[in-house]
Image (tube, rainbow, N blue to C red; front, side, top):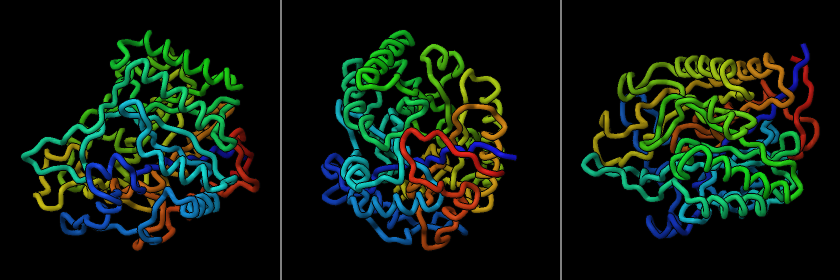
Length: 395
């Protein structure tokens, strides 16, 4: 049959470049590469450290980012969704995007933002079991901070020619809409905030924003706030799509063995079971995610015992390239079976080294994950512009 090839968008975690806020706390030149290199094996069969085949690189270097862009585009990735942070009235970890991606001269890969409006805890690495994780940055914002954030996003990013557009609208995703509702004081206040955001986008020449809401059932971070009735929230806010960030958001890992959970295929099956439910129950399209793996143990202090209950994002899962490949095929079939004018598949992630989920080549598997993406979603024949919705392909 003939199907619409979905956009394939990889989440990008931008903590692999020097950032002044991080340097003030951890020292000059610190990045999460420090955690990657120091990660010990925690149990028999645990493969750590997982080392990049390309070595330690500064993602805010336009040359490095340009090579990432070419590598992604050559393997069927159409764009990055940057995990994007706004704390204390200012952007955080924006060097990879603004100094790297936007300065690279890229015309092959599009990009968009997922506003990661969660609390930021000190997990770099997480302190010893006798000390609670320190809250470094609060995810809540005031209405004035939201308006400043929206103006910054429209001016700095929506104006870029490679920003992802869906039906002409810039794609903007929100990670914790529940946190935003509580921060602004209720759903009506959030409605008003997004109406203002939409007006800014229209004033800039767009028909408005394409609001995407991330949905899940099981939290990972200590303070993650899900939403009990996503369908009602989607309707109230006028969201145009929903999506998933990572498979472990759809699997109750709290009931599994420590430190190693069941096979990665069990997590994939649980995720797609929820994906089918979302697609049936939500009033807007739901777009599936495919996740490379899950092992955030590099963020756990290496000098203390690796204990159940201390690290809420543990246990770990043993990744599998074959399960990842089957996940890509399942995601392709999932979007093909639902008639929508726009189709999208996200991948977690391009470079989440300290959560064990990355497409970038490592010293163990080489380019195998990228090759799986290329096999299931062959690269487009033409360079991607932000507004291209999809192309037909035989399937």
